[in-house]
Length: 238
Image 1 (cartoon, rainbow, N blue to C red):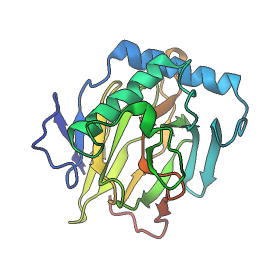
Image 2: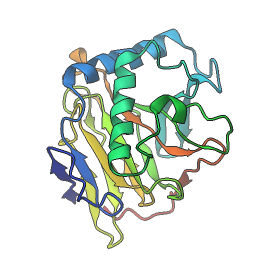
Image 3: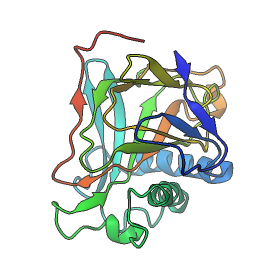
Image 4: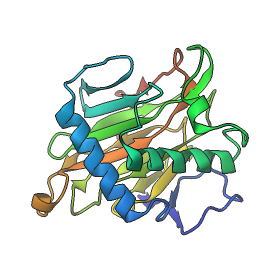
């Protein structure tokens, strides 16, 4: 198992379409901590599937997969969540730097498409509860994006244990985003490569933490064409 390469700054020479990377400290710790609190408050204030189709959350559950997903698809969905919006904006700007989003596009216009067939950004939060959170092997169609960015707004070994993301490379080696993927870090991986999240476990420091791994991501695709292909039959190569 190989830990993903870590970089302290954005390096435009890195090929994000072929190599997993951790960008360290891309989001300020205070912003990440406040964003975490906003996510937890969202769950407290909204019932599952309330306002479905706009800004809502639901449970993703199947064999070897369990987490809660919040989707912010309405234009005003982040107005009362300023720190979480800053996290999404940071991802947006990094996508622009690497050419995946046009430099003259704006965050608000790309998350408010006039048609479900238009390419859009889709702000999402994945909440993996400690003790039950897991995501089985899966992959994505790279038609609209060739790499995925994802931010951690929780701290491993404080908010949770385990929860490593594993990426299966074309040469059948495995790269991992493990305890080195810390609060405020952003990781990138080739979107079509098989990947999974290992079980998220309860930390002994849970009393002062979120008791979860919370990931902030923003897939790029028309809202009528998002696909996740589960690879449950994949033998464990890692």
